[in-house]
Image (tube, rainbow, N blue to C red; front, side, top):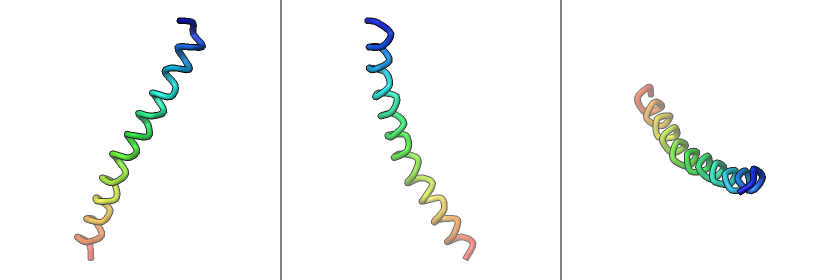
Length: 41
């Protein structure tokens, strides 16, 4: 497998993991923000 094929294969996987990571972390941040708002008011 040459470098270009390797890159073409790895890039979407890296991109996908980034999207998954964002989907996992975003609700956590929102929940923390909501909890913070509730606890301060």
